[in-house]
Length: 273
Length: 312
Image 1 (tube, rainbow over the protein chains, first blue to last red):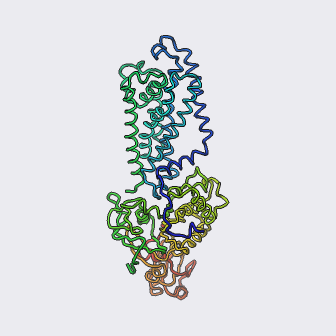
Image 2: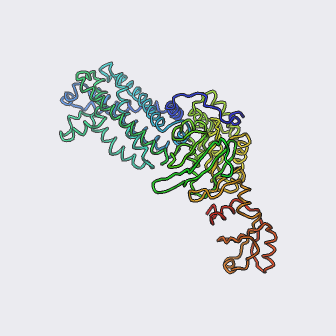
Image 3: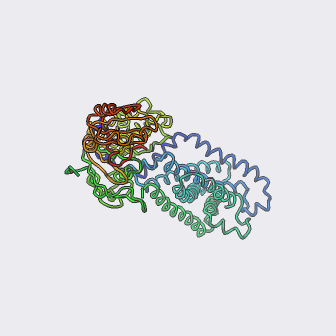
């Protein structure tokens, strides 16, 4: 019974406190690993079959010219990759954060140990990044299987999609940490994620939108994410390197601001008065 | 402070916690010595939990000074928390994990190696009498089992100081006694316990020394026995009368006991000889429905100090 009998033994090994939070999320995920991978695989297969091949066969030749002269499937697939990362991120950034603060209150348990609120924020964000990399890798694999990638640069669409997801995950998690109930999450999905999914250049180029609303698409991270993944998949990204850099910088800025806000809101929630 | 240990594990002077205009803890002084079992007794809202959170370094102090293991919580929060065991009022277990996984991951927070944490987890499962449930999910466990798991979890880092915030609130009597037995064993092994409770029997069972808190302040301090001797009589005679009778007794109980306390449902006679008081009641021709003679408890101390019951 030495674990109980020896009061005051020092901490034996100090290692990354952020990593411990990540480890906890992995332990939770391990249970649903297989079914989760299967879903990540099935979803793009269904979407690319129905929308890319099915719906795509109705896309006229004149429309094909507007999307860069490639088949609709080739146009759609990378956009859908970025949009899927956004959707997964918005889910990962809401319910698990609420769970840790309100339901299981695990973040409170973590904060009773040497783990700090900052570690909790960064550890969760690191976990979301890993999840997004995994989902994007499987999705990209499906794109390649469908023969919908024009360039080997598609490999770089994996981190680009994950970055797109994080650009949403960090600010949404910052918001989630201020909430006491999940009531407002539905509003985020309904009025934020779904319209972006439909109108940010995933299914058609934003040039098809009325001129007045085009700037709206410009300020949404998904437009920049989809532009990146599409440019990489088609191999056209470096035709305009400055624009490519702008896309990346805007996404990085969203992640940076979101991360800062997330640390603040989690801190405010855990540190009492 | 009647006695000030030379090297207290916790030292608080004029310790204050304010939330905006509201003062939750109002300039309290106390010391906790190593190896001691120390309690905060008081009703809900007395400031017990706020005090515990300040000691646990998850709530910054508003005023005064606080030292925990010789360190300042504002400067060394993570270092102090590394040596604390915390049992919060509300369970914070991960329902998605198994009983054993909950212990293992918690040990990992302290930077313990997987091998070490696995060894300790198995020992603690035995200690908490949860060995058979090691690989079960946490969700279906009873309230008492979850509390035992939370206590086992708080011991994974072999803490110098164990903080227990209302450890048995909401448990049935059998589960409470089992928990008390485990805590008593820890105390015997030299673990310093600091606990809050609004149960006087819990305080009497577990605390070497305690402070009584009311409305953000400490109103009395001592061992359970000292407090009872100081603020109450040796025995108490409880009288229950039929409805309406108690109000008509004006003055008829005078002189029977050192003190008479009228509660909504009963009358308490504070006397060193409770039997004699009961006989005297009878001799005066009063006919209570029930008469109970018992020893004084901390409940009586609290009633005396604040004019209110601990549990409303």
